[in-house]
Length: 293
Image 1 (cartoon, rainbow, N blue to C red):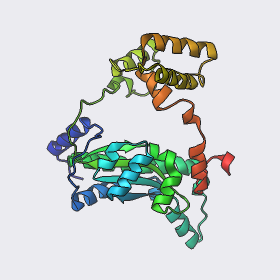
Image 2 (image 1 turned 90 degrees about the vertical axis):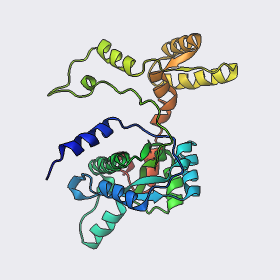
Image 3 (image 1 turned 30 degrees about the vertical axis):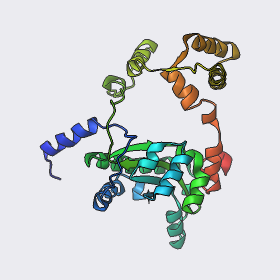
Image 4 (image 1 turned 180 degrees about the vertical axis):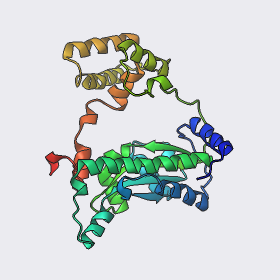
């Protein structure tokens, strides 16, 4: 294995500057470039060299629009030159195992499920990095998990397959300011997990989310609807009195913090407990949790 430090520094500098892109030009990605990028993903690390995933390359404008609408109306997906649909795929391995008289229970195993998910993300991230090095932006879409049945129908997916994520690719129309990340010292720990105090943890996240608050609607009806939805999330964690106290404070301030928005509205605390995704996986024959066997 040969090393070219100059090229390595060039690549690492680009990787350290990466950011998600949600605004694309209409420039298509050349076929040879896309092929090269996908090859980087296929060569990613995979447990036992099983590669329990498949990738659907979606370029059709109507289908890209359908995916965008299905995944919450995310317009950048409709703009993207390519949407890559990453499937957890036990179908091919099940067929091959049975043809070779090998046992097969991977679709029922939590170990296999988690390793397959790791493998799929390794491939996706290798593709995302390769695309960035080619000047191609991207954005991950996780809400495809909420529409597994619709994707099964749209792409004629066989049993033992299910979409796990989408990666939208395209040439950036423009780059926005990069989002702040947690500092190195709050993510990378040497040898052991440090005894971080509440003050240290809060200070780290306060720096990351500095200046980020969401203003409540001025319209009284919309404002009350927002607060009611926020309270519904709060009640998963706090009692009625505490929840009311938080709602009152938010109403008086006229805004909520970024972490309140993230877990209270964006990743709604109650809705994220909904078992529909597990049921959708089970309907596809993927049920790695004992309660579904």
